[in-house]
Image (cartoon, rainbow, N blue to C red; front, side, top):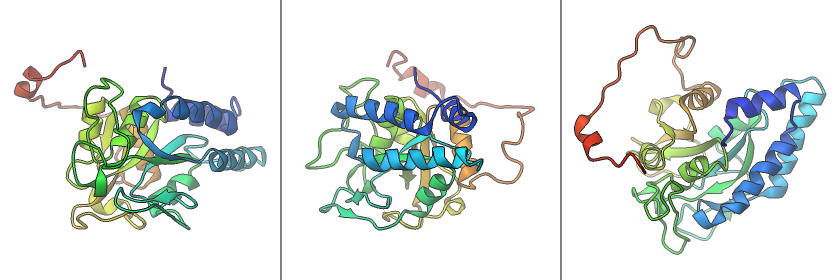
Length: 255
């Protein structure tokens, strides 16, 4: 059963589990699901060092963060200090610093496990990249996972991590979220800094993320400052849901 970011952070913050223990469990899942092609790079040693830092802060009586010990994978279009980045178009180059969104998530206690696969240049909806292993949909391996944030969506759907960072220019978070059966969130473009993210179409590029449920997506939005004041402060008193009946008729619920 996949655990939510909320429950993992609560366990680490209260000391029921250590961030190191949580990280080891999710690294094991990451290695066990490598056949899905979702991850281009795993940094076991770096992730464990980060987890131990979270545990040390808690033991010192400091606030370890709203996402304390929560494992995260990052789309390869973002810079992560000490990790390679190619965007699927060049030999990987190791970044010396974190993208702004990655840095903000780290400050909230996340543990970055590695870099997620993506459609080459983030330009496409299949989520595949030439000269890279195919990225498979964990819900139905014979089908595409969607893109361009394919590895991020697959990682969440396969239970490798409860949340993942992606980018959305024209559906690159929302498409793989829908195809893999997870939650994708594209905030207002200006709400999260794109510094350290490879550009595709700067007037549309937006930092986005994927999660196992809406509450986890909202938690990430709060950490990244993507919620307008007052949004998410309480339960809605009235909720309207619009359903495209024609789309449902063409869907395959069993998948």
